[in-house]
Amino acid sequence: MSAYERVNTGPAIFQLGIPAFDGLEKLFARARSSNLLKAGSFSSLIYPDPRGEYEMRREIAGYLSISRNLHCLPEQVFITSGYSSGLGLALRVLGLDGKKVWMEEPGFFLTRKGLELARLNVIPIPVDAEGLNVDYGIEKAADAALAVLTPGQQAPLGSTLSLRRRLQLLEWAVSNDAWIIEDDYLSELQLEGRAAPALASLDEGKRVIHIGSFSKTVSPGLRLGFVVAPTELITAFSEVATTLAPAPSPVIQLATAQFMREGHYIRRVRRLKRLYVAQRDALCEQLRMHDAEWVKAGLAVLLRLPDGAPDVQIVREAMTFGMAPSPLSAWFATPSRSSSGLLLGVATASEPYLATSCHRLFEIIGRYCEPGVRGVT
Ligand SMILES: Cc1ncc(COP(=O)(O)O)c(C=O)c1O
Image 1 (cartoon, protein in one colour):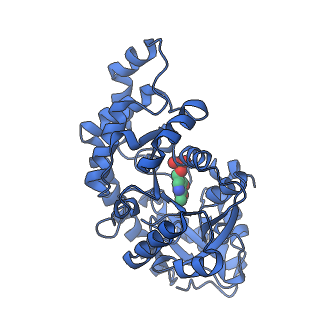
Image 2: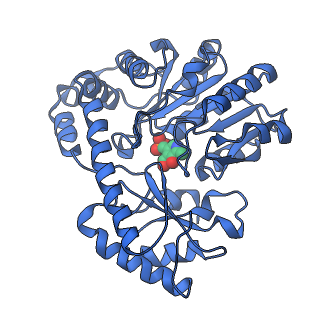
């Protein structure tokens, strides 16, 4: 399946990576009725700022300092069309062709593909309950020029990079002149307690390029995200943004800036958290009734399958019933027999369909994993 096909499906029950629609009607209605969409930005005859609208950059800097403990100047913020385009921008700026890069194993398949397309030599680094195993990285490839990771909530297993590992990673980057790309795709959308501060908040603006996205907190349809560049790289980011990767339409930026300024953004994130916790608890209850075992994994619940179970085939069959869990093995560069499992997204597990969907899913699993599956933690 192509990278495009892997993300361009659904929405379906248990699908990962897309938010609940809940409350979005109001946002879109506001944007439609907003004066911004009626005239303003459309009628401007000059080119917009390729780094992004200043108002939007200022809103993001303010938001990051409150919610991610990341203090930066609006001048460090570059507006992009989501995480993927932020990654492309950052890789252009760094120009690391042929160099080694650490990447989480398992990790986000589009990041892996993007790094390969940028001609980097991807070194898979295992993750555990403390996040990326930095010791392993140093032992395998201390000379890497870059590490790309999801420190807030590891994608897909959900662990948070521990403070010990954060300090170790930053120390490695400083002493090896290496860069770190922090993929903060979930921002503060953490279901368990308060979200850990951004890794970049410990770095004093030196080695960490922080990338954020509005795809999970508002909608992937916005195609909106941002990069916070270390101060040393501001000029290089400005040049690449101007020539190769200008910010998306000012209309959508200004509508979103207004949404943030008026407090709707923070309220939406809080509402989503409450909704997802309720949906996740209902899902776990269903799994309990099916006598399965599972682990919570960020915005998903991971149902492990017996070693060697064909998780990709199971998902293919589930898709014909309108369900789209993600096969765990597909997140590995080199899947093994023990990397079989199903990631059940909680954002799309809305309660009215839950019981029947779970019932059907276990029927399908049962056919592939006789004499009946027991998820194992
Ligand atoms: C790990 C990870 N990073 C980033 C993103 C978001 O990317 P984008 O902002 O391009 O939609 C996703 C979406 O599924 C993801 O899983």
